[in-house]
Amino acid sequence: MTATSTTPGQAQGSGFEDVTRTDASLRRFLHGLPGVDQVGAESRAAGLGTRSIKTSAKAYAIDLAIRMVDLTTLEGQDTPGKVRALAAKAMRPDPADPTCPQVAAVCVYPDMVATVKETLGSSGVKVAAVATAFPSGRAALDIKLADTRDAVEAGADEIDMVIDRGAFLAGRYQQVFDEIVATKAACARPDGHDAHLKVIFETGELQTYDNVRRASWLAMMAGADFIKTSTGKVQPAATLPVTMVMLEAVRDFRDQTGTMVGVKPAGGIRTSKDAIKYLVMVNEVVGQDWLDPDWFRFGASTLLNDLLMQRTKMTTGRYSGPDYFTLD
Image (cartoon, rainbow, N blue to C red; front, side, top):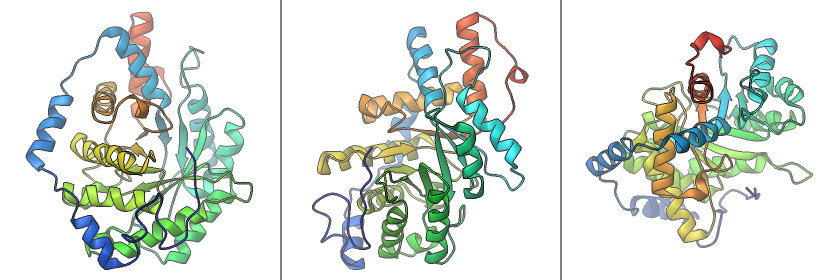
C-alpha cells in the first residue's frame, strides 16, 4: 500500500475534486450512488456463506486468516504486561508449532503503542492504534488530530480512526470528509513512512446499507487506506451483508480510479467457520487481489484461538481445547 498526503477539500485519486469541493456537491454524489437492494444483498451474502471448501483449501484458508488478524485489546484495564503478552502471541501464535504464521498486527490504545512496538521489534507484525476519540468519535478536531499524532510519533504503523456518526447521519458529509483528510495528513512522518489509515464506520449505527455504501465512498475519496466496519463496542458489528456492500464499494472504486483500498470487518467474528465465510466472500466479490493481509483484515480478540484449535486438529488429528492456547 502507498500512502499519500492530502489537504482538506482534496480527494484521493483523479476526478473527485469537483465532487468534494462543497457539501452540496458531495451530497449529490453520495445520494446519486446506486441504492442497495436489502433483500438481494442479504440473500447473496447468505448464499456465499453456505459455500463449502475442500480440506486442502481449508488448511490454506486458516493460515491466511491467521495472517489477516489484527489481534486486538481495547479495554480500560489493559496493562503493559497484558499488551506485551498479546504482542508475544502475535509473533508466535502457537509456541509449540514454529510453522504457524504470525498475525498481521496488534491493535491497542495509543498509550500502549510504544510498549507493543518495543516488544514486536523487527518481527514484521504491525502496530495499529485506535484514535480520534475512539469509540464515539465525539471530540473537537484538534483533540482527534493530537490523538492521532501521538500514536504516530509513538511508532504506530496503522491508525484506526472513527468517523463522527452523528455528523454523517445529520448529512454533514463535508465535515466527515474533511476530518478524514485531516487525520490522513496527521499520519504523515518526515521520513515518508506514513502510517496507514483505517476508517471505522460503526455500521451498526449507520442504519441502512445505502449509508454503508455512502460512507465507503466518502472515506475512499478522502484517502482511506482501509475501510472498517466497526469498533467492536456496538452491536451489530461486522456482518456478511455489510462487508459485502463495502467490498463492492472498493471493487467499484478501483474500477473507476485504479486505487485499491482494503477492507476490515471487526467485531463478532469468533470462529474459523465465520472467517472462512468472509474469505469466500472476498474471493467471489472482489477476487484474489484482496486475499492478502495488505488488503483484508479481521479485527478480533477471540478469533485467533479458534483458528489455532482448528489448525492443530488438521495438522495432528487431535482437537485441543481452548485452554491449550493463551487467553486473549
